[in-house]
Each structure stands twice: as structure tokens, then as C-alpha cells.
Image (tube, rainbow over all chains, first blue to last red; front, top):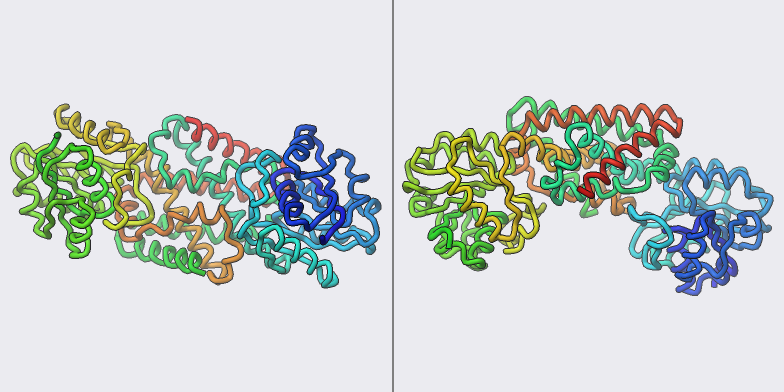
Length: 285
Length: 285
């Protein structure tokens, strides 16, 4: 057992799945689940993700050896700024937010007697909530850990073991590098999926599109079903990196549009071929 | 049986799957497969998609009651302009090209003794070639048929029955409307998938991205594995509609970027919420 008492704050899809997996692997003892919604708290008890549930955040974190913040990223930042006085000495705090630099910044408000290591599981789905939680959610997916420059190695190692125990691949990285890369591989694809749906809404009656929806549409827009409130937080928390990625994307779209309008086969094909080759290199890496 | 002799020109994924399904449903008699590649011809014989194969296009279409052109869309147009003299009187010609107005235009070169009805199965995958052909490729997918203004109803009805027989949902539409809608639901998503890969190539070493690739990346970019040669033809054949869709998309991306940079929660969330609602309306339609 790595942690005698785990408190999961925001015990939905991610927090609930993490608790389930950690309990099944016998890596944690008692689990306290915190949620504002009564239905979420009942759901967490029913599926066995938590041994007890509460809406009293301050009391729940006071007993924990490990506090796992799985709320939306702006809420994580707010909680990191206010929870300090309630944490017990030596407690380890981590989170599951998709943007890390903003979280690391907020974590500087924590007292010295606790340790913070940022976390980001590259798992989840367009579904949310405790009802979708499952212990294999993290299987074979990357799980980033972002310690600060002064974090001692022992708590990082404990989290590496815990992450491995829930079935994920732990990767210790700098928060800034993490944010730059997820802007490209996750935040930009989400924004594109929504932009494509918005474009469809601008151009046609949504109901008229039904017979024209094939696999391409369904794949590219699946993540547009994700929760807008959660994602407005994530995108804003990584706005600088995302804006830079959008700048490059706009340039590529401009180039493709120009070559498309120009009409010759060669230039458009060359652009497609290069993009296709990059896709293959990424897929094979 | 609807057609005693079917000749499939370009017997790869689409043409091979169509022939397999039509034979299994006893809707066609003899099937001749045409391909330039020896491996494709052998593959078509081996999986039973064709009873005989040849690379002699002119001789192969001369015997057919139904000619099914499943080559890339620019090749379809070129073939429609040259095959006329070889077709037997009363023959029905159709195709499987993803853009229809250009094909309908090229079909005007056919002699009056044959009938042309454009076709577009909304099926397929990023895989190509006869090795990927399967009789259930069209199951539960839309299959558009685009007759010309003077096409008599009987051949259209024959194709409707054939399309239903291979498991697809036949929809008779105008070529222009078809092209406008597939620009949005298929051609634009493909271009976006390639633009996203191109952006990744501009910004990072492709190999460095591996641990950062989750479900969002894989879904949005899966179709970037499609064949660039085939797709440069499709995109160019529908360039006008695609350029218009790209114009609206750029406007939406510009709006999102502005709201992202501005920093307040409300405006970005409102944009995401509207796009999300459009996604739900489309998905439920």
C-alpha cells in the first residue's frame, strides 16, 4: 500500500476511475470522495470508488495522505490557493488537470509542509461523470507528472508507482513542455472539432446533414461532444500555446486554400503528401 | 437478377466490395474486373469479386449491361469522355466518385444510346485496394445517386434496387446539392485532418509527440492516412464548395482565437456551447 488515506476531490469520470483502479490494485487504503452533487456522491459509493463521501472539502482533505484534485482546471487552481491550511503535514497533493503551468503556478500558494506534483492522465472520453468511471480507464495511456524545480524525488517516485499501478505509463516532464505539446495533440484537435461543427451550423440546416455523415465526420467531431464548461477552462488555461498552434494551423489552411483555388494538381498534391507523411511518421513513432 | 453483365472499372476497395455484395445478393450475373495492376486483378479473382479480369478497358465495357467506374474521380471524368464509342446500346453507366457535378459534366460526352447516373457511396476507409474489399462495406451507409435532368426513371430505379441490395440506403439527389453538403461533411474534415498533421510537423519533431497522442488526436487524424493522390483529385473536383466551407471555417477559427486571447470566460464558453449544441443537433438528426 502506498497511501493509507486517499481523498479524491471531484469524484467523476477521472477521479472515480483513478480511485477504483488504485483500490483494485491495493495501492490505497481508505478513500474519501468529495463532490457537490448528491447523485455523484451516491454513484461513487455504489460503484465502490469511495468508502465514504462528503461535500465538506476542508474536512475531507484534512485526513488525507494523498489528495487527488480532479475538478475542472480553474477549480483546481482555486482549490490549491485555499486548501493549504487544512492539509496535514507531509501530505502529498496532485491533480488531473489538462494544462499544467497554470496549476504549478497556483500550487506555489501551498504551505511548505506539503508537497505538490502536477498530474495529467491522457485518458478520458467525451463522456463525463461517475457513471462512466471504470478501473481500466488509464490502461495503456500516458500519465504525465510535473514536479516543480524543488520537489524532492521520493513523492514523485511514489506517484510514479501509483500511476503504474492504475495501468498507465508515467512520464515525468516539465510543465511548460507538457503544455506546448498537448496544445498541439489535444487542445487544438478539440477546438477544430468545435470549429467544424460551428461551420456546419453557419452553412446548412443541421437536420439536412444526416444522410451526408460518414465515418470522417463522426471521427473528427466525436470530441465536439465533450463538456464545453470543462473545456473552456482547459483552453483558457493553455491559451498562449493554443494561440500559437492556431497561428500555424491558419497558415497551413491558407496555403491549402491557395493551392486548391489555383487548380493545378501538383501543388495541392505536394501539400497533401507532406501532411500525409507527417501523419505516418507520428503514427509510427 | 438486375444486370446480366457487370463490368467494374478499377476493382479496388469500393469496386471490389460493390461487386462482392452484388454477387452475394444475386443481383448481377457475370462480373468483369478491370485493373491496370496485375496484383489487383489476381486479388479480385481470389476473393471472388470478379469472374474474369483484364486490363483491356474498351473490350471489358463492350459486353456490359452495367459499367461501374470506381477509379479516382479525375480518371472517371477522363473515362466518361473516351469510353462512349465502346459501350453497347442501352448500357447503364454509373460511378463511385466523391464529387458529382464534375462527373455529371464529363458524362455529357457519352452517346445518347447509353444512360448515365452518377453515384457516391458514403463508405470506405483510409485503407484502399482490393485486399480491404468486403461485401458488407456499404451496410447502413448512404449511397447517393445523381441522375441528370433528362435521365429516364427506369435506370434510376434499377440502381436504387441494386444499391439497396448491397445493403446501403439509396438517396436520389441533385449533383450540386450533394457536392455542397459533402464539402462540409467529408472534404473539409479530410483537409482539416491533414492541416492538423502539417501543423504538428511545423511545430515539433513528429517523434517527440508519441506520448502525447490520445484518443482526440487519433480520431481527428485517422483520415489523414487516406491516399493523397485520390484525395487531391476529390478536393480539386469540388474546389469551389470546399473553398467556401474553408472561408466559413477560417471565420469561426478567427472568432475562437480572438475570444481565447481576450481571456474572459464568457465569450469563449458561449462559442463552445453553440458549437457543442450544433454537434448534438447534427448527431441526433
